[in-house]
Length: 300
Image (cartoon, rainbow, N blue to C red; front, side, top):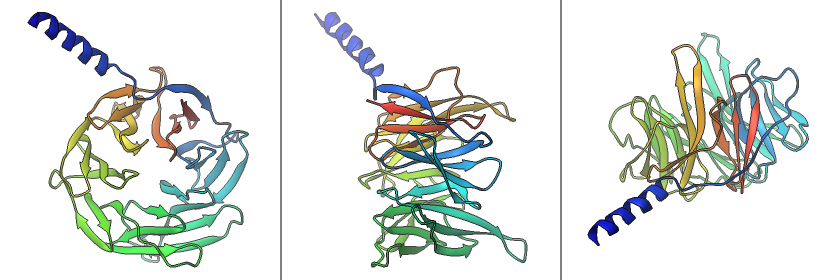
């Protein structure tokens, strides 16, 4: 009897280990302009379009997923930290410039999609943290530990909790106060993202892997080698498991992981899939290939 129960427990564990976290309905390629080589895609909250960073230029372009129609967002943008408002009407992006002393400065800007009207949120600075947050029409960023919040519609700015990277430190800012979390001590932290419910942070620690912790830096859980992770919902993240030979990426898959480290591969073995971006409704995931092609994973 004891042996039977033990065997049943092993069988249940095996089933759980291979259980699907999500169900893929289809994978479709986005129809990009002929000369565009995409590097980083950001999918809109409703999954209807992507904003693409062009590897050949500094341009950011909006591409409708259904018909491939394009709209230039800016000729001088950075694909990292692109954020799209909940209603899809505004795109927030970082813009790098070189000053008179040949030093790089970074500004944070917003473009109104319908009109092309550009608004400066943070003036060019040497100390703009990597990581921004957006709630309604208010954008929150961190400059050298100081909160920078601005409303884009003339209403009172609404500060939103944000996680960011400052010289390799993992910072958490809420209610106007910034604290350094560094859950595992000093290291090189990358790709932080706050869960939709604002209670957890996913991040990557160089040389160690991907982890999730609570917003106070406690309850650390390891998710394995998963880079550039994004939240699909409050319990699942998606990231890339990439391998390189020191010169170029030799393999990369898009992986879904729950907070206990159970994983599911979402892309085929013969595809090099990188830099996933998940829609806010959890139904679509965009990714890019080294050739600059963009695909959408549609989930059931």
